[in-house]
Each structure stands twice: as structure tokens, then as C-alpha cells.
Length: 211
Image (tube, rainbow, N blue to C red; front, top):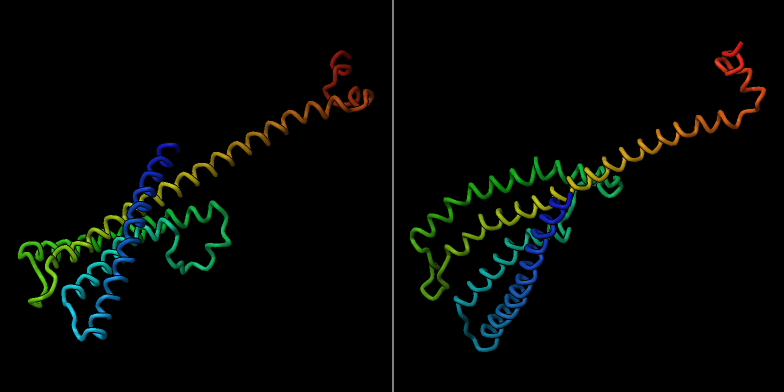
């Protein structure tokens, strides 16, 4: 259990730090977009490189922010019964959903986008415009990178769900053991509380054995 929790905490800290960095990306995107609008309508000018920079910052904040949103539980849930489930039920939903839906989806996106990004790297793809921002291969590399970071955060969620299930099972075993022990200890106590005449009349009592 300690290993699962320590691993999940490490992955959560990584996602949280990435989210903090991406927050500055969002602020920079707003600032650059404001500058583009000011140049266009205030000075009758513009810059394609600045417009491409807005696209790059938005892509990085969106794609790499998927893992942070999952760590912060900010994704929209379509399961309407999740909120009314017990801790064990929620853990089962998280564990099964991660194994059946999330991780296979991340593998599909990563595999499908790997060749897409590799082809862009092979030709050092840049903007189609002469004044545009280069490094389009970096933008396309965000797709497999986003799949990888989302899968890592999914493993963190699976580890926490598995830890919850193990704790619930351990707690139920302890409760059953304590209940059986209480019942076993209550039977001799109940016998000692019987009236002496009742104990003597009971089958297998010491008086009958002596007789």
C-alpha cells in the first residue's frame, strides 16, 4: 500500500508542477493575443509569427494540461451515478475505467500520432507562411507527449483506486474477524450468566455427567 501511495504521490506532484508551468503559458497566450489585436486595430499592422505563437501556446496548454486536469479532477464526468457510489464503488469505476478506456485510448493516440510527428521532424517542418513561426514539428510532438503524460496520470489514478480497494477489503476482513471473535467470547459469557438451576438442567452439564 505504501508503494502504491508513494508512486501515486510522485506522479501527482509531477502533474501539478506541469500544471503550474502551463498556467504561465496561458497568461503568455493572453498577452500575445492582446498584442496582436492592438497591432491590428491600433497600428494597422500585424505579425504572423505572433499569431503562430498564440497557436503554439494554446496547443501546449491544452495538450499538456490534460494530465493536470485529470489530477485536479477537473474533467467532466458523464457517469451520473458516480457521486452517489461508496468509496469502494468509486474505486472500482476508476480502476476499470482506467484499464479499459483511458490507457488503451492513450496507447491508440500515441501510436497513431508517433509517425505523424516523426515525419514532421524528418523534414524540420516549419510554417507555410514566410513570416510564420518555425518549429511546427514541436507543435505536432505535443500529441504523443500528451498521450504519454495522460497515461502516466492514469497510472496514478489506478494506483490510488487499487489502494482504496485493498484498504476496504482489509477493513472488511478485520470487521468480520472482530465480529466472529465477539460472538465467540459472548457465548461463554452468556452461559455464565445463566441461573444455576438452569445450568444444572442443561444437557451435558456436570451434574448429569456425574450421575
